[in-house]
Amino acid sequence: MPHVLIFEDDPLLRSMYEQKFKTAKFTVATQADAANAVADAVAAKPDIILMDLVMPKVDGFDATRALMADAKTSRIPVLIVSNLGDPATIQKALWFGAKDIVVKANLTPQQLVAKVHDVLAGKQSEHVLNPKLIEILHIDTQSKPKRT
Image 1 (tube, rainbow, N blue to C red):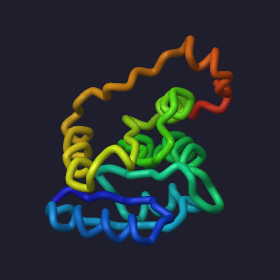
Image 2: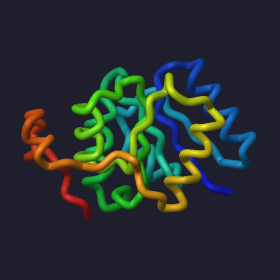
Image 3: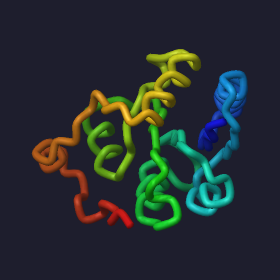
C-alpha cells in the first residue's frame, strides 16, 4: 500500500482527502500545519507528500524547501495542492523542488488520487521549470534547497 502524508490546514479538505485516499487503498497520515514538516515526514515515512501552500505557521513553500534540503526527506516527491495556480506560484513550487502542482478547485478528490498515482509512477509534470521566468518573476534563487 502506498503511503501519503497530507499537509492541509482546512479540516474539511483534510478529512475528505484522507477518506478518499484510504478508499483508494493508501495508508494516510495528515497534519494541519507544516511547522514540523521534516520531522513529520521522517516519522510517517511516506511515499509521497501532498502540500498545501497557504497554512498557519509555515507555508508550503518553506516546508517544501526544508523537505528538499534534508537528506532524510529529499527523495520523497512533493505534490503541491493549492488554490494558487498563477505562473509565479507554479515556478516557485518547482524551483523549491515540488514534482508538480495542482489547483484544488480544478480537480475532484478522485482526480487527485489519479494525479498521485501519476507522480508515484514517475510521469512527467505538465509544468516545466523555466529559469528565465524565475528571473523575470524575481523568485529568490539563493533560497533554492540543495538536494542531498
